[in-house]
Image (cartoon, rainbow, N blue to C red):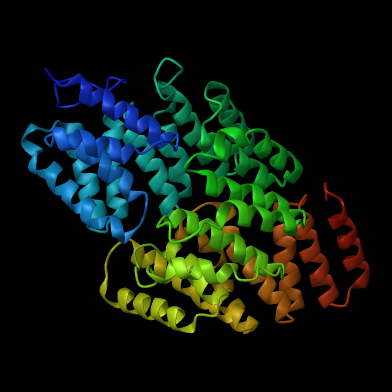
Length: 461
Ligand SMILES: [Fe+2]
C-alpha cells in the first residue's frame, strides 16, 4: 500500500523508510544543513525506482543554477520519466517540472510545481521550489503569493511550518510589506531559532528599512546558529551591508577576509556571487581591495561562457572587470551575444533585458567611461527585477548608475537618482552622502552641507 510523507502528501512507494529519508532530506535542505542530495543518492543506490527521490534530487540541483549539474540532472529526470507508469499524479507533476527545467523553460517548471501545489498544498518540496525559483527568476509577486495560496491551511501542527513562515516572510518583504514580513519571520524564529531563511528574511526587512545598528545586533546575536550552515556566505554578505551603509569599510574587509575569501576553487557559485557583489560595492566607495579581485576572478574564469543564468554572468563580469581581465570579459560578452542569437530558453529574456546591459555597464564603469555606463543603465533601471535575486542584491545596479552619473558630472541626474534612493531609505548615511555629492556637483554647497550633516548621524533621518 502506498505511503505518504510526514505531511500526508502521497508517495507511490509503499516503503515508509523511503518516505522518512525524504522527510529528513527536505528538512536538511530547507535548514541549509547536511548534504540532502547525498542522502537521497544513497537511498536511490538501493532503491532506484524511488520516483520522488529522483524528483527531489533534480529539484535541489535546479537551485544551484550551474551547468556542471546538468548531467546529473538529466540522468535523474530520465530515471523519473522511466518510472512514469508507477508514479502518482503528484510525482508526475514534479517530473514534468524538472523536465521543463532541463529543457530551459524555467517558467514552465514553476507552473508545473504550482499545479502540484494547488492539489497538494502540504507539498513542502513543491512550495519551496516555486518560491525559491520565483526568487531566482525575479517574480516578486510570485515569491509572496505562491505561499499565500496555501498559507491559511498550514499551522503549527504540520511539520515544517517554520519553513513556510520563512518563505512567506521573505515574499512579504520583497513586496515591501515590512511589518507583516518581520512578524512572520520572527514567528518562524520563535518556532525554530536556527532557521537561516527566516533570519535572512528579517535581515532583509532591516536592510530595506535602513536599520543598520539593529541589523548588526540581530545578526551577531544569532551568529552561533547561522555561521556554520550552508547559507552563511549570504548571511555574512547581509551583515556586511549594514556595516557598509555606516561607512565601516574596515569591518566589511574583515568579514570578507575571514568569511568570504575562501581558498581555492570551491565550485559553489552562490558563494562567489556574494563575494563579487561585496567587492563591487567596495569599489563603488573607492575602498582598496588589494588582490582580492584576482582570487575571485580565478574562480569565475571557468564559467565565463556558461550563459545559463544572467544573474551569474553579471557577477562573473564584476570579477573580470574588477581584476582587469579583458580576455575573460570578451569571452563572456561574445558567448552571451552568440547565445542570444540562437537560444530560446527562459534566460534569453533575462540576459537581453538586464544581463547584457549591466555587463556592458560594468565594463564601461571600470574603463571610466561613466557616460556610457549611465546610457546602458538609465533605460533599464526599473526592470532590474528581470535579473532575479532580491531588491538588496539588485540595488547594486541602481547604485552603480548613480555613482556613474556622479563621476560623469551629470549633476541634475545624479541628484534625481540620489533623491529617489534616499527617499526609499532615508536612514542610510550612505544615501545622504550620495545626495550631498550630487548637490556639490551642482554647486549647491548649502544643501550639500545639510546632507552631509544628516549622513553623520547613525540614525540619519
Ligand atoms: Fe538576501
